[in-house]
Length: 271
Ligand SMILES: Cc1ncc(COP(=O)(O)O)c(C=O)c1O
Image 1 (spheres, rainbow, N blue to C red):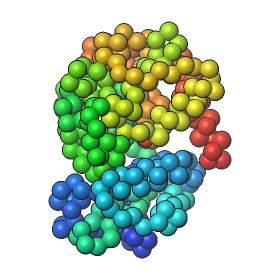
Image 2 (cartoon, rainbow, N blue to C red):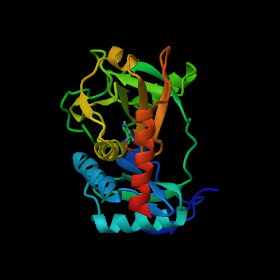
Image 3 (cartoon, protein in one colour):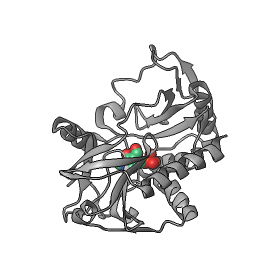
């Protein structure tokens, strides 16, 4: 069954919810979005997600309705969905009208417990080049999703995006990290990766657990030589990677500490 949808605050049944074919989001991928997890009807880190939505909208020169209003819509849908993913889409049918905000709650998608990743070049990625849209979660996800589909077609679960110099960036819809000798390494935000809210929360968990984290620019070979590897995202939380290319990883203790610490943080904040 399709979930009910708030369109600019008006509740519409999922079967009737629609957006014009003249929408520039539909036609050109022009717009931005957010996905946040709700636990027992309470969104996790909604403030951070709504801040990122505002920056994404600002980067696209879209005048978003005020934060309290959107926060109210998010809370409403989160409460209706319980344990769910609340999605917020911002797009416009005309550049002359205020952007439309669509909010709904979906069941949590099934994702593999241990991921097998295919490294793929990502020449479209900002990868450290300063562009106006760095850090914006825009609707233009076709290159990322094409990489994911290419990886799936080749028998992997998803892709690992690599820059022109062979350095690791992120996944199409997640951040990555790995551990060597008990120390965590992860590509820096300066690489033009998305400012993942899960990744930031994992840094807090690591600090509490006494695990050192180094952000930087790391060649794929260094990642492949790691003791363990993991992904981070709203939908996946913290999950082990079990294979990259033909290199296998065992889920390890650092990943376990971060995954369970993240869960504890969620419980603390959403209880
Ligand atoms: C490219 C990319 N990187 C990282 C992430 C993880 O971000 P978050 O932890 O805020 O979900 C996402 C989430 O969709 C993403 O699309």
